Image (cartoon, rainbow, N blue to C red; front, side, top):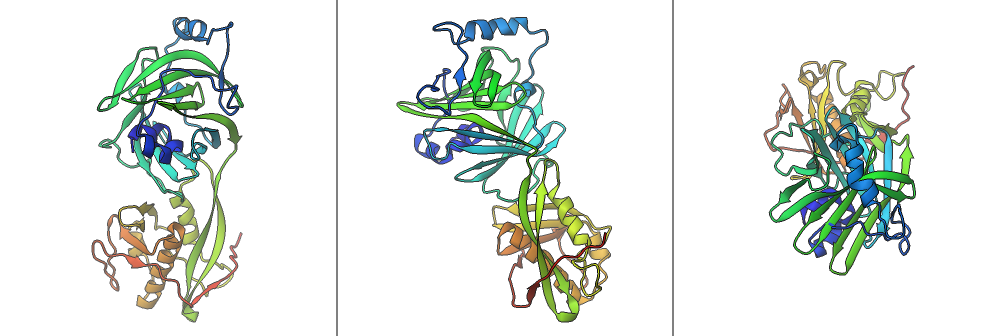
Length: 388
């Protein structure tokens, strides 16, 4: 698959496998025949706004336009896109994390969910990391991205017609219009037009000031696929149900409960799991055991796509402050594995301490050794009861 399609038009994911290209070299107006598409504001019978709103608008700007103006990081908003030309054209976009000069966005289509890290640096907006099949909350934005191999420039300053750069061998990307006015179902946007040229196709993205992408158009021969912003959902949070497991040592079994978690922008999945692991499921009884000490922290929770395993990494206090004999320690480890395994819906879980394989006085695992997420008949659902 072409990376251009993956980064700028994930809604075209499967369709692009056949077409093998992306881009557009014009601002086609499909509004009359395809209602979900936006329409450029007319300025006369044949005026598409380029003369009045394009070059002259650039000259009248008191301050230079920034790339970030056209790809801002939006907190607790979800953008909905729809269009025609492919069953995968509809998508939603939400910012999971926003951290200084980078953000992690979640793209959901009918075909997949993709996590993408966007980085703003030196007047450029980069897409630096993409992870497909990402259905659960994970955090990649805080990784060291300095050596990201596939970083791709989405927008580059100066924001003016003619600014161009390469995004791959034989693939040219260019700002082809500035200051256009684009009409959509959710309102009117001042946009820049960024066109990507390949041998047999073009892919045009319209970025709206203060909102990011508002329209995209792919053209190849007689094929046309477009998507346009149709809804802006405010105060949005990703809601996921998580099952937490704990030891009930005296009964030699695990207990569990289901909790609905609301992930607003910048709510760390590690913080949520820490909160639940620090507390026992029934604080009105001493029959149940918390999974970690108060000083223990979770460094990260991720899905290892190469091996198809869940991965959780703890601070060293997970071992040094675990006050448990061998049997209880085994039940604690089983509870962690069942929780992470169920969260990612995987059969195996990798458990590490500060990046190293788990090793305590009772258990020691080797590099590449995973723990089985195996349900048993010694598990019972209970009602959580936390003290105020």
